[in-house]
Image: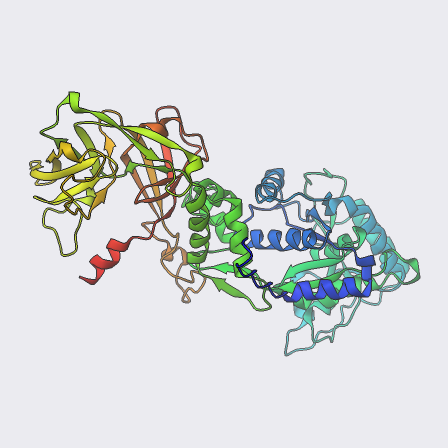
Length: 569
């Protein structure tokens, strides 16, 4: 940076950073910062999780701390090793490394022992009410709760029943362990919440060793305390659960199960995105119903879907940074996410020429012997990327969108009698339009100006239009998948009563072009490699590709100035 260049203004701290700085200044936790990212392995992570990952890992790194990756595997019915592996991959792809990899199941014995302690202290009891009865007894915001008839069982009886629950003597749902707090509490979460339920299900790590499993509200805080997490960062829906989080950790009394100071739960606004659903349940339904090809379908908001579409980890981190950290739920415009990837790929993606909807051009006054090579830069603003040579031949392909038989105003592309520049090659003029029996334009016959080789007229005449092209004999055939938003409505969660949310699905969310023609250098592209197809957009090679059968996904388009002009006419 030169001496006369002003330094960028420092970014103001968000509210979580202010809390961390205050804790460090007071010496709390010895100035230490240890966060955690605790996903449940019951599905694939999405862009909302990416924001949480960036916040937890980024915050710890900023203060010289660390982050644990902890899997909340307390519900074996919905969890699977497949999801554990995908979560690991997603976090690493985003550019983060965790200090320790932990599982709530690592602490099952500790949690059980602490639960027995709470029973002994008269702070937990075994309840025989059914799920429906528990809900009825709990009341609601207008009706106070009433005590379970089993609430005053003795500590000895509760301890005996709890141990028998663990031993498998009772059927699923026959009994639960509840914390004894306050059935009159205004906060519904404090009305004797469940701590354990009986659930006979094979666990992906502990097998069949347990038939009782802790509830999230109990396991969450206990796991944080065991790991000596300093700042437990959650989304806003957990703000009403914070008193319960604190209650469970503060009941250890003289037993001192947990190191002081205890972790502090802090809530921030979750991320929602326009034209997108973030509900795991609905995303799973899209997969199960075959509406998308899988969790990594490039239309999905999953991290693996974004990766397959061609997004970079840098662009996702930049998006999370621009969205910021707030105290109220917000909806980010999908256009901001697209801006971040476009900004990133503008700098790093090499340029290539590709014709997605080919229209044949024959240069009638050019012989085969007149063919030549055109040398073009791989990036107009980065000489370090070098150049490449492209064959220019008598037969070419241009894009159908670059021709109008009846040219509108301000049309500077090809039309009958019009002259255009073929990028880096020469000037050509359309002389004849060939149509098939149905009246569709199938070929253009043009003439070139041999003196314009290189792209400029020797007499200095002005030619405004410049088109991309590929040599027909040398072109690589490919399939190109053009993706759009998965829903037609900005807020697909806002569905009128009685209407199926899937009615809002966008029928044009995927267009498959099977006849695209690419410049020959793209034949050697590797899966995941990203390019800018000139004048078209940014594309990434899909893993479905095989030798001789390339498949490219459109990551994001370029800003199309002509479409805006045409819309006004």
